Length: 339
Image 1: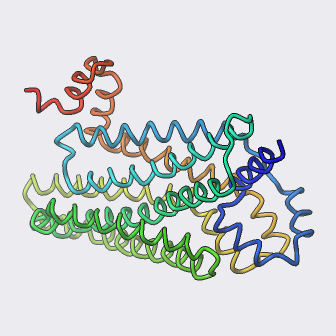
Image 2 (image 1 turned 180 degrees about the vertical axis):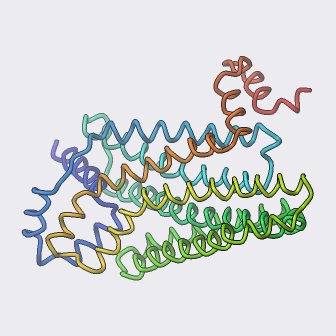
């Protein structure tokens, strides 16, 4: 009974702060434990585990549908939608990590699962790697989509020669390889201040990079459009700007949802023991909810901004050929192979 209680407390603590942050915070605030506990009792916010599980499952289903829709519709087989597909996979990592973690917590709480502290540490590391990979890859693909839109607008005539499918696949592979490698290194060296500094720096650099591209796109797009007189090319310009606006919305939502988390990291470095910061730290559960909400909102933005994707999502949801028979499911996902 004591073992189950200790395991549950260990898991419950993970929802209060990610292990990498917790260990660093504990090292930096050892002499101020009593003050921090007093602040946490007055500022703490408890969120039901069922809410984490519900939001995680909804987000997971939504992003799976986005990935399937892009795979199904051949009109969506373009570099931009490949990047959007990868962004959806990044969101799925957060959802899967949250669902797995919450299920383990609930099972342990009700005595249905008995795990050793060593197993919990391994699970904790895997979940942290997934979360870290998600944020690094999400930022990277947001920058990639911004660069793709920039090329589409300012190098419209050369776009297909610049952004080929092969180059898009190479970029995707490099982003995932870098994200996973960086995440593993971050977890291995979680006790070092440099880890938090690197994450915050990367966050700021990507925001500045994307903001610079946006400013150039929206300021000069009107001037550039005058140079393209053909009707087809003008329509292409409008489509490209629509993609840029979609990316603006995605980035705005990302900043709103992930911003408190990165502010949490900054405060750990700057003021880990002040009353305001310790009170801010106690709302970490709310920051996790916002992160999950980002994964939940992104697919809605894709569907709202893209008529083609919205149409395909409707077909996936209401397609009469989707039954429990494997061949019917395959026919719905890959109709061109059955014609």
